[in-house]
Image 1 (cartoon, rainbow, N blue to C red):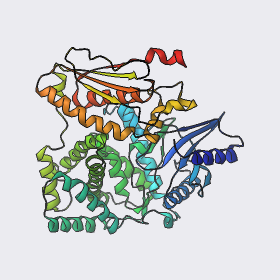
Image 2: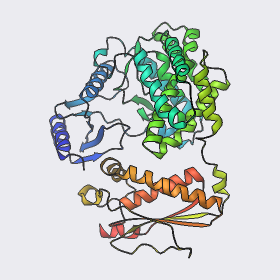
Image 3: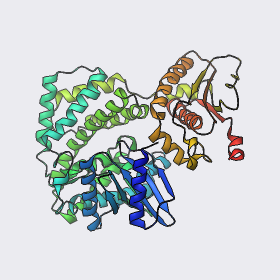
Image 4: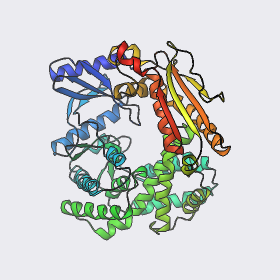
Amino acid sequence: MASPKTEWALAELFESWAGVPPDLILPLAPSGSDRIYYRLQKNDKVAIGTYSPHARESLAFLNFSKHFHERKLPVPAIYAENLDAKVYLQEDLGSTTLYSFLLQNQHQFPDSLVQLYKKVVEKLAHLQINGSKELQYTYCFPKESFDRESMFWDFNYFKYHFLLPSQVGFDEVALEKDFHQLANFLLQADNEYFMFRDFQSRNILIRNGNPYFIDYQGGRKGALQYDLASLLYQAKANIPNDIRESLIQHYLDTASQLTNIDRDSFLSYFYGYVLMRNIQVLGAYGFRGIYERKAHFLLSIPYGLKNIQWLLEEGKIPLALPEITRCLQAIIKSQKYDPYDKSKGENSLLKVVVNSFSYHKRQIPVESSGNGGGFVFDCRFLHNPGRYEPYKKLSGKDESVINFLKHFSDMEPFLNNVYRMVDAAVENYLERSFTHLEINFGCTGGQHRSVYAADQLTTHLKDKYGIDVTLSHLEQANWSKEN
């Protein structure tokens, strides 16, 4: 598990705040960083405990949070901190994110979701403008402002982690010239406000119908346009263009009440920042997806390219950037990152069977079609949550077990390797009109690791290929009996 010393430090900090020790310390879903989050609870006392190995990042978050909270901005309260142990406690705002609303609506935008986004952009304007007043930017990490150097960090991330592995070929001198042109242009915008930096739906919690913001430790001084661009052009949010335009105007209505805003000037820079943000995002997706081979980041690339394509086709890029434009157009035209045509899977005869099972209770399941073959993946080398009392009566379907596996085992790289092997077989079988593939995941008890892995692969295959998948947890009838 995580260092027992960390959990002990959080328990001690909780007791100093609540007056009683916690009787629940469970890990939460991991973020994109190496911070680790826990929910700690005793009766009606609940807090989110955070372990962060980066002292300067923690100082930024804690000081920003206190400053914003004092000004009644929608951020968590800070309850207690022990930076020597690299831990702190913050208010529990729940686990419902704006992104979860997007998933529930399957990327449709009913009026209820539009109204929620309106609340978000209103609160964003207040955070950026009112939150910036008297803010101690000296705590910013890694820099106090989104300046030329910061922009070039993003440009180079894009160049080396997305353009190069995409093998599009580029004129480096011409590309650098475009980067300088874009930076010169964007730095002309008013940049004296708080810039959240990663303002997207996963960092917005919804409680009682109201938005609250988290994970702004990378914030710094910058232009208002960047965060609005991050929100409205988040790749997988897939917000319709007419709704985007109405939300821009709604944001400006609020911001204009808080400071002097020249709408024409704001909009003249806005789409340049949309391009800047998408360049940064593609660099991040390239690093996480192409280099680290994390499948869900690869699946996000087409959405980012769709935003870029819209900017190019609508003539929204406000200055001539010939080499950037040529490279992006070449990648889009290559269809290298286009999603698999799901109609092939939906109209195929291929049936995939996915099982979880216990090595302790049975042999490897017999392949049911009579064709033989298939895959068997042994999960027993992964850290077993079933060894720990809080998880023994749970399964790989329970949130706390899932978070354990994400944090404290090698489940993610294991599944990424599984996806690569199984995807190759599925695509081959679809091309050859095969009708059956069986995939088995085994662990000691068939209750935690194999169950989660089988669930994840099933979701992956359905989402990517649209094929018919039958999922069976062969030990499920025994879970409750044995516990």
